[in-house]
Image 1 (tube, rainbow, N blue to C red):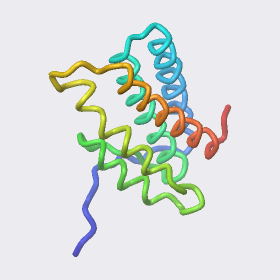
Image 2: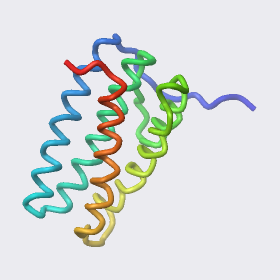
Image 3: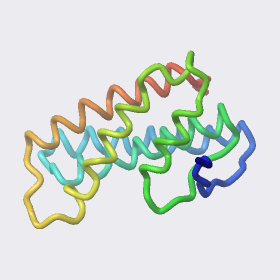
Image 4: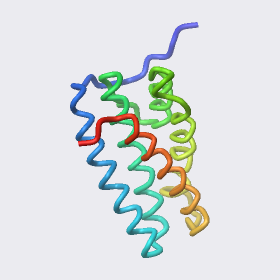
Length: 136
């Protein structure tokens, strides 16, 4: 069985700073949306924060980021991180990404309880990311 070919873009290691800045921006907007009880906005900013964190990790550690339309492909790329770096972050990212369709596309209200769950996951993933990267 051959490994699946994932669409990626090669980047310079220092480009991780661009994605980490985006992650920080999304994180701060996520918290503001939580504080103002805008649950859908909180959820979508949580997802985008996680995607930017993933891009930062992949850029810094592997010199790539995912270009696939399915964000679950990025999970496969995160699993390529060295074990001392990966140490469980991939599972948290996967759980966040799994919520994206519910938040953005399903004909169902995204409620406070839904938002609180994804915000906890995103906070964990954001902290994991910033603990594994040089913060500028």
